[in-house]
Amino acid sequence: MSDSDRFQQVIRNIDEANGEDPNSEIVDGVAQPKELVYGRRMQKWVEQLDPHAPEALRIAARSQHLRRWEIPRSNYPMDRKGYLRWRTTLYAYHADRASELLRARGYDDDKIERVRTLLQKRNLRTDADVQTLEDAAALVFLEHHLDDFLKRDDIGEEKAIDIIRKTWKKMTERGHEAAVALELSAESSALLKKALAG
Image (cartoon, rainbow, N blue to C red; front, side):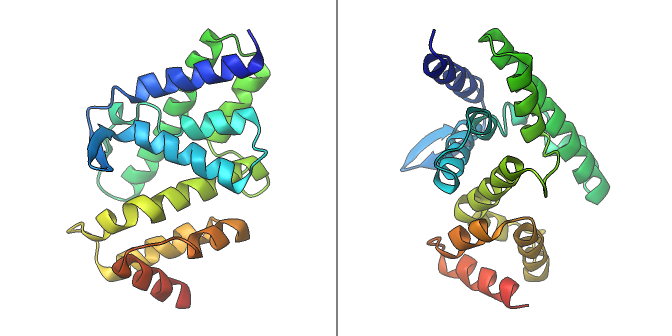
């Protein structure tokens, strides 16, 4: 089997796993499994940011939220400590699930470990691929989820601005350029400008 065939197969396996998500998102008028949609958006942004993205980075992008619904946020205290514990648990969980799929397709230990490093966001500031993954996640959030985020009852303008600023700080200049070029709703666009002006 060629490397290209193996890559396509593992992407299909990731999509099959995420296709079991009981939660859905409406895309072009059709309900689709939420994490399946997310994985596709992540890979699209990674490849847009880095047209020569290595295989491990593309796999990590596609499996960034692999079977995320199995560890819901509601399992943890609804405070910052609970949120951070949830995120840390998810990093390891996604890495474990991706490792299983890669191993089943015959990937070697080095490639599996590289995907694990990316999914666990190790060396964020010094590893260019980890940073590309972080930029992609921020762009998916801004482009597809900011509007819904702003409608939540527990999110006021001040809190939303704080979260946007924290997200922005994690991004590179390349990510910033992509973000300001996004076609956002009037509300999200105004809030982004307000956050960045502060």
